[in-house]
Image 1 (cartoon, rainbow over the protein chains, first blue to last red):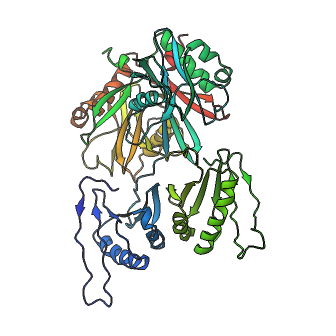
Image 2: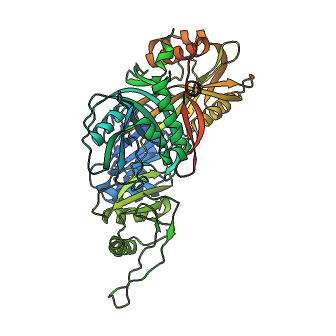
Image 3: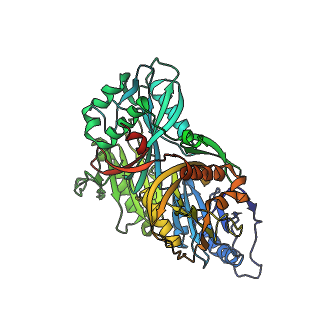
Length: 284
Length: 284
């Protein structure tokens, strides 16, 4: 697969002059997995691109390249059709670009899978009076139902789960918090198109108490007794909500150990958070 | 967003006959979020498609539609460029199709975000002799390093994490297992392109012991003492690995509570697994 590390620029090459027609070979960036990435950033005629792509693949095969990636920004959309016609398939897309890929090797295809899950958080923010921070949303499935729910939100690409929980609570309610633990998580499927969803229930300790709600998404916000929250008919009716409420009540009344984030170093030298039951680990 | 539930087919319509040129309006499927999805499945001329798309958007706006989705299979790639030129942007792509979307409403854009995470599992399979099931892989970062590692794999879209762990162990080593708990998980960033990664360390109990390794991915597989596994220089060197090994040792020697999967019912009536510390919950 393509990575930004270990990138090596390849010199622009021309095919020998004795060829009937000179076709400009494309230049790309190599990665450590036998891949080469073309980051298209200049306008190019569709037919010229098709010819260049066809002419470039043969030497790449000879060099033992296994995969060719083409990143096409939205404004160069005319290059998508010729790439598909040369055997490329979609790998993933974001609003501003489409990534195509072609496995050109005879070896087993080891292309990385596309992202499969969206990740969200729900924030259990509880004060010393056993009051929990709850909101009513302007949109979504809870709109107009009168159900008071935990603040929730989507974890962004590149964002740590615990940081997303702190951010979402601040954005929706203005409350400053400290992260405590992940108490539970839920995996659900086909939550949008074919994709799955992971939703982490995070406990946070409030450091401020004066609610300043965000008006665009949030219709109302308040502190509510945990018992009143859990007693809502909607919460009692659906076991995913009643189970989470039970976990939260247990956390306040008994010893319930969730998972805490601990920074660790990976084999590539990066810092990644490992979440585990640190209370039980520290028995040793 | 577009969902398959609540879909309503819209009748094909023609603009009035007194128009100078008859342009066929496109037909789509409505969803419950004010969206309409065009599932392109017949070959169409690019220019005719552009005209039809342009003519169709105006009535959709009048009907209060908020988003128009276009699903373009690879073989109809010629429709991508006209859609982009009409203001559509990429939402996501899979090998066989590209999904474009256009937010046509003046209200706040509430389009669902694209999937942001890939999800993987590592399997801690330990027998009654404190031996752990380990493998050496033919490819990847551990290739040729001699490092013995837990079986690992990618969780597919629509697949439950605990089922993925059972499946991967069976595929790589032939060992039948029963799922015990999630002991820890790690979140890492920019693991492929801009996407993040969640990796769940799963404990499983073996029900069979005779290893039948899968030859394509796995160079070697064996049962190894947990102490020998943890003592490997590579494991000791990187704190993400040594921490996981410590969690596994604690699990065998002391009371370490991880998260267990419990089926729950969501508000849409689906079954979703909630993972939590069920031992601590059952104190109540």
